[in-house]
Image (cartoon, rainbow, N blue to C red; front, side, top):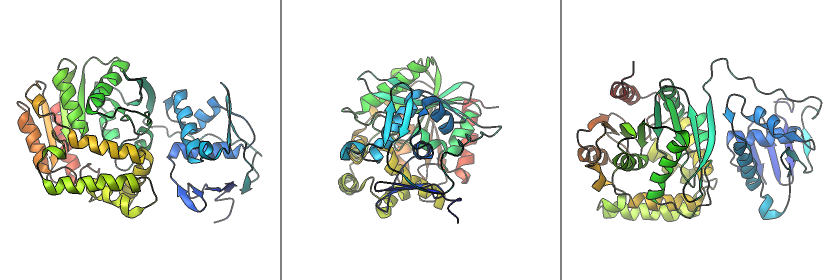
Length: 406
Protein backbone atom coordinates (compact mmCIF):
# COMPACT_ATOMS: atom_id res chain seq x y z
CA UNK A 1 0.00 0.00 0.00
CA UNK A 2 1.43 3.40 -0.97
CA UNK A 3 1.37 6.53 1.21
CA UNK A 4 -1.21 7.99 -1.21
CA UNK A 5 -3.54 5.11 -0.37
CA UNK A 6 -2.90 5.35 3.35
CA UNK A 7 -1.98 8.90 4.42
CA UNK A 8 -0.54 9.20 7.90
CA UNK A 9 -0.59 12.23 10.22
CA UNK A 10 1.79 12.46 13.17
CA UNK A 11 1.68 15.03 15.97
CA UNK A 12 3.15 14.82 19.44
CA UNK A 13 2.85 11.21 20.62
CA UNK A 14 -0.01 10.55 18.18
CA UNK A 15 -0.22 8.89 14.79
CA UNK A 16 -3.43 8.88 12.72
CA UNK A 17 -3.51 6.16 10.05
CA UNK A 18 -6.34 7.00 7.67
CA UNK A 19 -6.33 3.74 5.73
CA UNK A 20 -6.49 1.68 8.94
CA UNK A 21 -8.94 4.16 10.51
CA UNK A 22 -7.08 4.20 13.79
CA UNK A 23 -5.38 6.64 16.12
CA UNK A 24 -2.27 5.51 17.99
CA UNK A 25 -0.59 7.07 21.00
CA UNK A 26 2.94 5.83 21.57
CA UNK A 27 1.99 2.81 19.47
CA UNK A 28 -1.17 1.96 21.44
CA UNK A 29 -4.65 2.29 19.96
CA UNK A 30 -6.82 5.16 21.19
CA UNK A 31 -10.47 4.11 20.69
CA UNK A 32 -12.59 6.64 18.77
CA UNK A 33 -16.10 6.45 17.40
CA UNK A 34 -16.48 6.77 13.64
CA UNK A 35 -17.66 10.38 13.84
CA UNK A 36 -14.96 11.48 16.28
CA UNK A 37 -12.34 9.89 14.00
CA UNK A 38 -13.83 11.75 11.02
CA UNK A 39 -13.74 15.01 13.01
CA UNK A 40 -10.03 14.61 13.75
CA UNK A 41 -9.27 13.64 10.17
CA UNK A 42 -11.10 16.71 8.82
CA UNK A 43 -9.16 19.01 11.16
CA UNK A 44 -5.82 17.42 10.25
CA UNK A 45 -6.54 17.64 6.52
CA UNK A 46 -7.02 21.38 6.94
CA UNK A 47 -4.30 21.85 9.57
CA UNK A 48 -3.79 25.50 10.44
CA UNK A 49 -6.94 26.59 8.62
CA UNK A 50 -10.26 27.43 10.20
CA UNK A 51 -13.09 24.99 9.57
CA UNK A 52 -16.50 26.48 10.26
CA UNK A 53 -19.05 24.49 12.23
CA UNK A 54 -21.25 24.20 9.16
CA UNK A 55 -18.37 22.81 7.09
CA UNK A 56 -17.53 20.24 9.75
CA UNK A 57 -21.13 19.16 10.23
CA UNK A 58 -21.64 18.74 6.49
CA UNK A 59 -18.44 16.72 6.27
CA UNK A 60 -19.10 14.48 9.26
CA UNK A 61 -22.87 13.95 8.96
CA UNK A 62 -23.62 14.00 5.22
CA UNK A 63 -26.71 11.83 5.62
CA UNK A 64 -28.06 13.08 8.95
CA UNK A 65 -29.62 16.26 10.27
CA UNK A 66 -27.95 16.97 13.61
CA UNK A 67 -27.75 19.86 16.02
CA UNK A 68 -24.60 21.81 16.77
CA UNK A 69 -24.39 20.08 20.17
CA UNK A 70 -23.32 16.91 18.37
CA UNK A 71 -20.27 18.63 16.94
CA UNK A 72 -19.47 20.24 20.30
CA UNK A 73 -19.66 16.80 21.91
CA UNK A 74 -17.34 15.33 19.28
CA UNK A 75 -14.77 18.05 19.92
CA UNK A 76 -15.04 17.50 23.68
CA UNK A 77 -14.52 13.73 23.30
CA UNK A 78 -11.63 14.34 20.92
CA UNK A 79 -9.93 16.69 23.36
CA UNK A 80 -10.20 14.06 26.09
CA UNK A 81 -8.76 11.42 23.77
CA UNK A 82 -5.82 13.71 22.97
CA UNK A 83 -5.29 14.43 26.67
CA UNK A 84 -5.43 18.19 26.29
CA UNK A 85 -6.75 18.87 29.76
CA UNK A 86 -4.38 16.43 31.47
CA UNK A 87 -1.22 17.56 29.66
CA UNK A 88 -1.96 21.21 28.96
CA UNK A 89 -1.03 20.61 25.29
CA UNK A 90 -3.49 22.25 22.94
CA UNK A 91 -4.09 20.75 19.51
CA UNK A 92 -7.54 22.13 18.72
CA UNK A 93 -8.30 25.84 18.80
CA UNK A 94 -11.87 27.06 19.20
CA UNK A 95 -12.92 30.22 17.40
CA UNK A 96 -16.04 31.17 19.39
CA UNK A 97 -19.33 30.91 17.48
CA UNK A 98 -17.42 30.18 14.24
CA UNK A 99 -15.51 26.90 14.20
CA UNK A 100 -12.29 25.03 14.97
CA UNK A 101 -8.75 24.62 13.67
CA UNK A 102 -5.91 22.20 14.33
CA UNK A 103 -2.91 24.16 15.69
CA UNK A 104 -0.41 21.43 16.60
CA UNK A 105 2.85 20.71 14.79
CA UNK A 106 1.97 18.15 12.14
CA UNK A 107 4.07 15.68 10.15
CA UNK A 108 2.28 14.37 7.08
CA UNK A 109 2.93 11.63 4.54
CA UNK A 110 0.65 11.39 1.52
CA UNK A 111 -0.70 13.82 -1.08
CA UNK A 112 0.19 17.47 -0.44
CA UNK A 113 -2.25 18.76 2.14
CA UNK A 114 -4.27 21.86 1.33
CA UNK A 115 -4.02 21.51 -2.48
CA UNK A 116 -7.78 21.13 -2.62
CA UNK A 117 -10.60 20.81 -0.15
CA UNK A 118 -11.84 17.24 0.19
CA UNK A 119 -15.31 16.78 -1.19
CA UNK A 120 -17.90 15.76 1.40
CA UNK A 121 -18.95 12.12 1.15
CA UNK A 122 -21.94 11.54 -1.07
CA UNK A 123 -24.90 9.97 0.68
CA UNK A 124 -26.55 6.99 -0.98
CA UNK A 125 -29.72 7.76 -2.94
CA UNK A 126 -31.79 5.64 -0.55
CA UNK A 127 -30.48 6.10 2.98
CA UNK A 128 -32.08 6.06 6.38
CA UNK A 129 -31.39 9.25 8.33
CA UNK A 130 -31.36 9.80 12.03
CA UNK A 131 -31.78 13.16 13.72
CA UNK A 132 -29.94 13.52 17.02
CA UNK A 133 -31.05 16.07 19.61
CA UNK A 134 -30.61 16.71 23.33
CA UNK A 135 -33.10 17.27 26.13
CA UNK A 136 -32.53 18.04 29.80
CA UNK A 137 -33.79 15.82 32.59
CA UNK A 138 -35.17 17.15 35.87
CA UNK A 139 -31.74 17.16 37.55
CA UNK A 140 -30.04 19.00 34.68
CA UNK A 141 -28.57 15.91 32.98
CA UNK A 142 -28.45 16.20 29.18
CA UNK A 143 -29.91 13.16 27.45
CA UNK A 144 -29.10 12.48 23.78
CA UNK A 145 -31.96 11.05 21.72
CA UNK A 146 -32.56 10.29 18.06
CA UNK A 147 -35.42 9.73 15.66
CA UNK A 148 -35.45 7.78 12.41
CA UNK A 149 -38.16 6.69 10.01
CA UNK A 150 -41.81 7.73 10.05
CA UNK A 151 -45.16 6.39 11.16
CA UNK A 152 -46.63 5.56 14.58
CA UNK A 153 -43.99 6.27 17.25
CA UNK A 154 -42.11 3.38 18.84
CA UNK A 155 -39.79 4.33 21.70
CA UNK A 156 -36.94 2.10 22.85
CA UNK A 157 -36.04 2.50 26.51
CA UNK A 158 -32.28 2.87 26.86
CA UNK A 159 -30.37 -0.28 27.67
CA UNK A 160 -26.73 -0.82 28.46
CA UNK A 161 -24.46 -0.76 26.48
CA UNK A 162 -25.62 2.03 24.18
CA UNK A 163 -24.26 4.79 21.95
CA UNK A 164 -26.59 6.39 19.38
CA UNK A 165 -23.90 7.27 16.89
CA UNK A 166 -21.87 4.07 17.16
CA UNK A 167 -24.98 1.86 16.99
CA UNK A 168 -26.07 3.53 13.74
CA UNK A 169 -23.38 1.72 11.75
CA UNK A 170 -23.38 -1.40 13.91
CA UNK A 171 -23.68 -5.03 12.75
CA UNK A 172 -25.35 -5.73 16.10
CA UNK A 173 -28.08 -3.04 15.95
CA UNK A 174 -28.52 -1.96 12.33
CA UNK A 175 -31.16 -4.61 11.55
CA UNK A 176 -33.21 -3.48 14.55
CA UNK A 177 -33.02 0.14 13.40
CA UNK A 178 -33.77 -0.66 9.75
CA UNK A 179 -36.78 -2.94 10.36
CA UNK A 180 -38.46 -0.80 13.01
CA UNK A 181 -37.82 2.49 11.17
CA UNK A 182 -39.52 1.08 8.06
CA UNK A 183 -42.83 1.15 9.91
CA UNK A 184 -42.43 3.56 12.82
CA UNK A 185 -40.92 6.79 13.96
CA UNK A 186 -38.22 4.97 15.91
CA UNK A 187 -37.01 6.86 19.00
CA UNK A 188 -33.80 5.82 20.77
CA UNK A 189 -31.78 7.56 23.46
CA UNK A 190 -28.52 7.11 25.34
CA UNK A 191 -28.74 6.26 29.02
CA UNK A 192 -27.32 8.88 31.39
CA UNK A 193 -23.64 8.15 31.96
CA UNK A 194 -23.32 6.56 28.50
CA UNK A 195 -22.87 7.36 24.84
CA UNK A 196 -23.68 10.94 23.84
CA UNK A 197 -25.59 11.70 27.07
CA UNK A 198 -23.83 13.35 30.01
CA UNK A 199 -21.20 11.11 31.64
CA UNK A 200 -20.50 13.24 34.72
CA UNK A 201 -23.68 12.51 36.67
CA UNK A 202 -24.21 11.95 40.37
CA UNK A 203 -27.46 9.99 40.15
CA UNK A 204 -27.56 6.74 38.15
CA UNK A 205 -30.54 5.28 39.98
CA UNK A 206 -33.44 3.33 38.51
CA UNK A 207 -35.89 6.16 39.21
CA UNK A 208 -33.80 8.56 37.14
CA UNK A 209 -33.87 6.08 34.22
CA UNK A 210 -37.67 6.10 34.29
CA UNK A 211 -37.74 9.91 34.52
CA UNK A 212 -35.30 10.20 31.62
CA UNK A 213 -37.62 8.11 29.45
CA UNK A 214 -40.42 10.53 30.31
CA UNK A 215 -38.20 13.51 29.54
CA UNK A 216 -37.43 12.17 26.05
CA UNK A 217 -41.04 11.50 25.06
CA UNK A 218 -42.13 14.85 26.49
CA UNK A 219 -39.40 16.64 24.50
CA UNK A 220 -40.72 14.98 21.35
CA UNK A 221 -44.30 15.85 22.17
CA UNK A 222 -45.34 12.22 21.74
CA UNK A 223 -48.67 11.57 23.43
CA UNK A 224 -49.09 7.84 22.85
CA UNK A 225 -46.54 5.29 21.64
CA UNK A 226 -45.44 1.67 21.59
CA UNK A 227 -42.64 1.03 24.08
CA UNK A 228 -39.76 -1.43 23.59
CA UNK A 229 -37.59 -2.57 26.50
CA UNK A 230 -34.50 -4.74 26.00
CA UNK A 231 -32.40 -6.15 28.87
CA UNK A 232 -32.54 -3.73 31.83
CA UNK A 233 -34.50 -1.35 29.61
CA UNK A 234 -37.38 -3.80 30.03
CA UNK A 235 -37.73 -2.96 33.73
CA UNK A 236 -37.64 0.76 32.91
CA UNK A 237 -40.29 0.31 30.22
CA UNK A 238 -42.48 -1.77 32.56
CA UNK A 239 -42.26 0.83 35.33
CA UNK A 240 -43.16 3.62 32.93
CA UNK A 241 -46.10 1.62 31.50
CA UNK A 242 -47.42 0.93 35.02
CA UNK A 243 -47.22 4.61 35.97
CA UNK A 244 -48.43 6.05 32.64
CA UNK A 245 -50.87 3.58 31.03
CA UNK A 246 -52.51 6.40 29.06
CA UNK A 247 -49.25 7.02 27.17
CA UNK A 248 -48.28 3.44 26.22
CA UNK A 249 -50.24 1.66 23.48
CA UNK A 250 -48.16 -1.56 23.41
CA UNK A 251 -45.34 -2.92 25.59
CA UNK A 252 -42.66 -5.12 23.98
CA UNK A 253 -40.02 -6.73 26.20
CA UNK A 254 -37.02 -8.75 24.98
CA UNK A 255 -34.34 -10.37 27.12
CA UNK A 256 -35.72 -8.39 30.05
CA UNK A 257 -35.78 -9.03 33.79
CA UNK A 258 -38.02 -7.73 36.57
CA UNK A 259 -35.48 -8.37 39.34
CA UNK A 260 -31.74 -7.80 39.44
CA UNK A 261 -29.30 -10.47 40.45
CA UNK A 262 -29.20 -9.33 44.10
CA UNK A 263 -32.85 -10.47 44.35
CA UNK A 264 -32.48 -13.89 42.73
CA UNK A 265 -31.03 -15.66 45.76
CA UNK A 266 -28.17 -17.34 43.89
CA UNK A 267 -25.08 -17.00 46.08
CA UNK A 268 -22.74 -18.17 43.33
CA UNK A 269 -24.08 -15.64 40.83
CA UNK A 270 -23.87 -12.82 43.37
CA UNK A 271 -20.24 -13.67 44.16
CA UNK A 272 -19.30 -13.90 40.46
CA UNK A 273 -21.01 -10.66 39.49
CA UNK A 274 -19.56 -8.77 42.47
CA UNK A 275 -16.09 -9.88 41.38
CA UNK A 276 -16.84 -8.77 37.82
CA UNK A 277 -17.76 -5.27 39.03
CA UNK A 278 -14.42 -5.00 40.84
CA UNK A 279 -12.64 -6.18 37.70
CA UNK A 280 -14.58 -3.65 35.63
CA UNK A 281 -13.23 -0.76 37.67
CA UNK A 282 -9.71 -1.98 36.88
CA UNK A 283 -9.98 -3.27 33.31
CA UNK A 284 -12.84 -1.41 31.61
CA UNK A 285 -11.78 0.73 28.66
CA UNK A 286 -8.28 -0.71 28.49
CA UNK A 287 -6.95 -2.39 25.38
CA UNK A 288 -7.37 -5.85 26.86
CA UNK A 289 -9.18 -8.21 24.45
CA UNK A 290 -9.48 -10.96 27.06
CA UNK A 291 -11.35 -8.69 29.47
CA UNK A 292 -13.68 -7.26 26.82
CA UNK A 293 -14.45 -10.74 25.52
CA UNK A 294 -15.99 -11.63 28.88
CA UNK A 295 -18.90 -9.30 28.15
CA UNK A 296 -19.11 -10.00 24.43
CA UNK A 297 -19.47 -13.74 24.88
CA UNK A 298 -22.26 -13.19 27.42
CA UNK A 299 -24.24 -10.85 25.20
CA UNK A 300 -23.68 -12.39 21.74
CA UNK A 301 -21.97 -15.79 22.10
CA UNK A 302 -23.05 -16.92 18.61
CA UNK A 303 -21.84 -13.79 16.84
CA UNK A 304 -19.35 -13.71 13.99
CA UNK A 305 -16.00 -11.88 14.06
CA UNK A 306 -17.38 -8.52 12.86
CA UNK A 307 -20.14 -8.43 15.51
CA UNK A 308 -17.72 -9.46 18.26
CA UNK A 309 -15.14 -6.88 17.24
CA UNK A 310 -17.79 -4.16 17.20
CA UNK A 311 -19.11 -5.13 20.63
CA UNK A 312 -15.59 -5.25 22.04
CA UNK A 313 -14.99 -1.70 20.81
CA UNK A 314 -18.36 -0.51 22.12
CA UNK A 315 -17.24 -1.26 25.67
CA UNK A 316 -14.38 1.24 25.39
CA UNK A 317 -16.51 3.92 23.75
CA UNK A 318 -19.82 3.72 25.58
CA UNK A 319 -18.91 4.56 29.19
CA UNK A 320 -16.11 5.25 31.66
CA UNK A 321 -14.86 2.45 33.94
CA UNK A 322 -16.50 4.04 37.00
CA UNK A 323 -19.83 4.58 35.25
CA UNK A 324 -19.80 1.02 33.94
CA UNK A 325 -19.27 -0.32 37.47
CA UNK A 326 -21.92 1.98 38.97
CA UNK A 327 -24.46 0.92 36.35
CA UNK A 328 -23.76 -2.76 37.00
CA UNK A 329 -24.31 -2.19 40.73
CA UNK A 330 -27.64 -0.48 40.05
CA UNK A 331 -28.76 -3.27 37.71
CA UNK A 332 -28.34 -5.71 40.59
CA UNK A 333 -30.87 -3.74 42.68
CA UNK A 334 -33.63 -3.51 40.05
CA UNK A 335 -36.96 -4.86 41.30
CA UNK A 336 -40.20 -3.96 39.51
CA UNK A 337 -42.14 -7.07 40.55
CA UNK A 338 -44.58 -5.04 42.73
CA UNK A 339 -45.54 -2.98 39.66
CA UNK A 340 -46.22 -5.79 37.19
CA UNK A 341 -49.83 -6.45 38.22
CA UNK A 342 -50.58 -2.76 37.59
CA UNK A 343 -49.64 -2.95 33.90
CA UNK A 344 -52.86 -2.80 31.87
CA UNK A 345 -51.48 -2.27 28.36
CA UNK A 346 -51.14 -5.09 25.79
CA UNK A 347 -47.78 -6.77 26.43
CA UNK A 348 -45.59 -9.30 24.64
CA UNK A 349 -42.45 -10.78 26.24
CA UNK A 350 -39.62 -12.40 24.23
CA UNK A 351 -36.71 -14.30 25.75
CA UNK A 352 -34.00 -16.46 24.23
CA UNK A 353 -34.07 -20.00 25.56
CA UNK A 354 -30.33 -20.20 26.22
CA UNK A 355 -29.66 -16.52 26.98
CA UNK A 356 -26.16 -16.31 28.50
CA UNK A 357 -26.67 -12.88 30.08
CA UNK A 358 -30.16 -13.09 31.59
CA UNK A 359 -31.57 -16.51 32.54
CA UNK A 360 -34.56 -17.72 30.52
CA UNK A 361 -36.58 -18.13 33.72
CA UNK A 362 -36.40 -14.36 34.31
CA UNK A 363 -38.33 -13.80 31.09
CA UNK A 364 -40.96 -16.32 32.15
CA UNK A 365 -41.34 -14.63 35.54
CA UNK A 366 -41.69 -11.23 33.89
CA UNK A 367 -44.46 -12.43 31.57
CA UNK A 368 -46.26 -14.31 34.35
CA UNK A 369 -46.44 -11.15 36.46
CA UNK A 370 -48.19 -9.00 33.81
CA UNK A 371 -51.91 -9.73 33.35
CA UNK A 372 -52.60 -11.16 29.90
CA UNK A 373 -48.99 -10.89 28.65
CA UNK A 374 -47.99 -13.14 25.75
CA UNK A 375 -44.72 -15.03 26.17
CA UNK A 376 -42.62 -16.03 23.14
CA UNK A 377 -39.52 -18.24 23.65
CA UNK A 378 -36.83 -17.73 21.03
CA UNK A 379 -34.35 -20.41 19.85
CA UNK A 380 -31.07 -18.59 20.52
CA UNK A 381 -28.17 -18.28 22.96
CA UNK A 382 -27.73 -14.57 22.25
CA UNK A 383 -28.93 -11.85 24.60
CA UNK A 384 -29.14 -9.41 21.68
CA UNK A 385 -30.78 -10.89 18.58
CA UNK A 386 -28.59 -10.87 15.48
CA UNK A 387 -29.99 -10.34 12.00
CA UNK A 388 -28.87 -13.67 10.51
CA UNK A 389 -30.33 -16.04 13.10
CA UNK A 390 -33.76 -17.77 12.86
CA UNK A 391 -34.86 -16.20 16.16
CA UNK A 392 -34.76 -12.75 14.55
CA UNK A 393 -37.35 -13.71 11.94
CA UNK A 394 -39.58 -15.20 14.64
CA UNK A 395 -39.24 -12.01 16.66
CA UNK A 396 -40.17 -9.83 13.67
CA UNK A 397 -43.16 -11.97 12.77
CA UNK A 398 -44.55 -12.01 16.31
CA UNK A 399 -43.89 -8.33 16.96
CA UNK A 400 -45.39 -7.40 13.59
CA UNK A 401 -48.56 -9.31 14.39
CA UNK A 402 -48.68 -7.74 17.85
CA UNK A 403 -48.32 -4.19 16.46
CA UNK A 404 -50.54 -4.74 13.43
CA UNK A 405 -47.90 -4.43 10.75
CA UNK A 406 -49.26 -4.86 7.24
